[in-house]
Image (cartoon, rainbow, N blue to C red; front, side, top):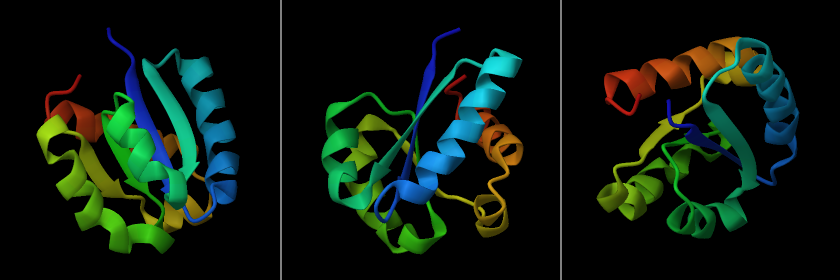
Amino acid sequence: MKIKNVVLVCTIGMSSSMLISKMQQVIYEQDLPVKVTAISTQEALDYVAQHPTDLVYLSPQVRFMKDKFQLLLSDKQTLVEVLDMTDYGMLNSQNILQHALDLLKVHQKI
């Protein structure tokens, strides 16, 4: 199965980097076909425009950027979603990864 690229976007990339560490552990333990990357809002639009990305997950504090990302990525068919505030705040990597996989399945990216 092809590896799916998920990008987490937050204000400066710090809180997402903690979440990424936990997500990478789950990915490793469950041998999931997912690569996760954390990036700041300043770099995110350029990054996702230049790198293959299956799902952009916006942290709750940057949810206002969802329309901008959807517009930019509409021709690439990249999914753009806002992370659940509770899962994000609790760094619940298991729930976040499961939700990502569910989204990718529903949109036939898996």
